[in-house]
Amino acid sequence: KTEVVVKAFLKVFAYFCIGTTPIQIGVVLWGLWIVTSSDYGIISLSQIEFIRHFFIIFLPIVDWLYSWLWNPFLDFIFSLPLIIAQTFKAIVSTWLGFWILRKINRTSADNQTQ
Image 1 (tube, rainbow, N blue to C red):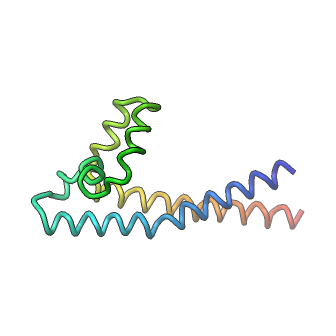
Image 2: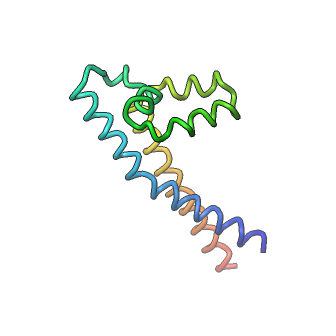
C-alpha cells in the first residue's frame, strides 16, 4: 500500500515538473522581450527585478518567503539572471519529470515480470 502511494505521489510530481515547463518557457520569452525592449540586459535582469517591476503580484509571496527561509539563500536565488536561471530550471525540471516517469514505468514493468 505504501508503495502505491509513493508511486502515485511521484507520478503527480513528475507530471507537475513536465507541466510547468510551458510556464517557465513563457517567463523566459517574457524576459527576452523585456531585454530587447528596455535598458535591461540578459545578466542585469535578475529574478527579483523581474518580480518587482513586471510581476508585482508575486511580491507578497516573496515577502512571505523572506519571513520563513534563510535570507542570504533567497538573496542569492533572486539575484540570479532571470533568463539564464529560468532556462536552466525548465531544462532540469523537464528532465527530472521524464526521468521519474521512466523509473516508475521501469519499476512497474519489473514487478509485473516477477
